[in-house]
Amino acid sequence: ARALATVDTTLSDDPELLASVLMRVSRLYIAQSEFTAAESVLARSLDLGERSPTLSAEIEALRGDAYRMQGRRRQSEPHYDKALHIIG
Image 1 (cartoon, rainbow, N blue to C red):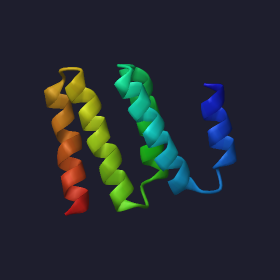
Image 2: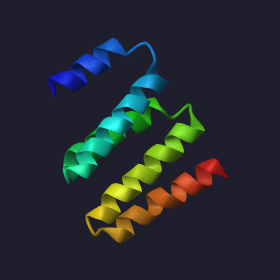
Image 3: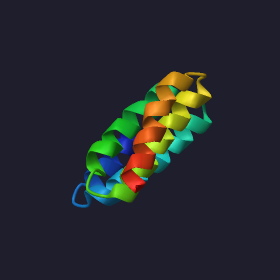
Image 4: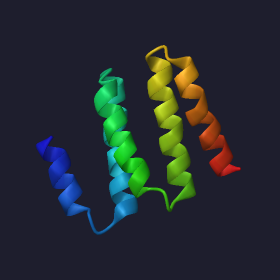
């Protein structure tokens, strides 16, 4: 948690970079099956990365992955659909 606070403070002037870093942190949480933490970080990164369609699509796809890996396929599909819609 302290590391995330440091990243948040250090990169606060560059929201897209911060969103990208947070997305990578969420990948680590997902790899460790820490899905609640991953979802929290992904929600924050999505808010920050909304100006970048590519980044937003990646975040939505990752949210879909997190749900799928938990066996929550129905909850994953809207995120995959949103990612596909964003990238057109």
